[in-house]
Length: 289
Length: 165
Ligand SMILES: Cc1cc2nc3c(=O)[nH]c(=O)nc-3n(C[C@H](O)[C@H](O)[C@H](O)COP(=O)(O)OP(=O)(O)OC[C@H]3O[C@@H](n4cnc5c(N)ncnc54)[C@H](O)[C@@H]3O)c2cc1C
Ligand code: FES
Ligand code: FES
Image (cartoon, rainbow over the protein chains, first blue to last red):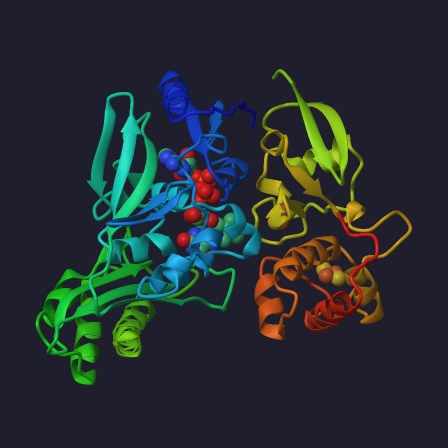
């Protein structure tokens, strides 16, 4: 393992370097995925382009929409004031990534581009209808997060493109978000299965808008669309929430591995989905004026 | 591979080193600077024995390039207290019998330091969570948790006279 190290000081310079190095180059954010891959000999880039001195990538902006710079760390997500209320699910996703040492450096952008099926923050961002801004030599484009990852470790990011931010719309009134994760232990654990839910209720307590996203139960993080549809315009009763959990479990395509069997993963989805929905309901009621 | 000149600020002192750009901070600390209090084990950010403070935050030196650390303040276990003195955390680890083989302890203590700096009144669960990235194969953790809670009390009543760097 040997490589040259580059520290561009502008987005433009970062993209120029990456265009120059092509497949020999890699962006480095927190390094919690990249450096581990390099140490394992799975990746062997000739050029590492650090993003740490590139300005404009570390903002958390909340106005009409919410914009997260690619270099925002999990640590900052979990402690941001903006994510303690209806957007609490985002802090919940961030605060279970690794331990403090990992969260202090690991970034949102790295979580997205690394494209692990078990990327916790990605699951929450899916439930928030996030879009991604990618900047390359040909300019800027916006793509949906849903569908961005196509296989474990593979995304639609083009060569030489830099992910600059993830954005999502502000939540409507009477909304809540929840993230739940099952692992073999409480901390420092990759998800066996995880669920993010976003619920908006109308004035008659019916589901106006619902998203259910699942992690670690398919080749990429996914939305459980049939489960979402099942809730449309209906009030969240216990029976309906349990049914929705079973539908979500049927939608996922889990594998069995050292952490859990495929069957156990599906069972977890059937349990976590109703729990997440119930907690959303609870939060909306608590937050209601 | 050509080496690059790095200027690193470690425990308040500037060190000029020539190192290949792919070398980690952990490697440079131990090999070039002889600061072997920071330990080396998994090299995958799993175990925490390589924990140092970077601008006051706990990070794993095994996945951090030395080149990334220029212009940023690093504290290792050697710099936690003035020479010949013990930081209240070190004192508490000794008093509570929280050290067996000792391999995990420098990382434990620095992770605990970073945590107590922002959470001066922790409870046991908070400490456990803060140390989740530090593995210990000897102690069973309980005495470590006790030591950190006791150090937190000590730091609240009498902060170290010579502020730790
Ligand atoms: C001990 C440990 C525990 C972990 N636990 C969890 C967990 O519980 N949940 C979880 O989801 N993850 C976990 N991870 C994985 C990892 O921490 C996260 O995926 C993290 O968000 C990656 O971010 P990073 O900044 O470290 O990425 P890096 O390692 O710096 O980069 C990852 C990849 O993304 C590319 N990249 C990074 N930023 C950009 C950008 N802006 N534009 C284009 N490409 C970019 C890099 O080139 C690289 O290929 C864990 C890792 C470790 C080591
Ligand atoms: S050696 Fe760095 S975390 Fe294990
Ligand atoms: S004291 Fe031996 S590993 Fe912790």
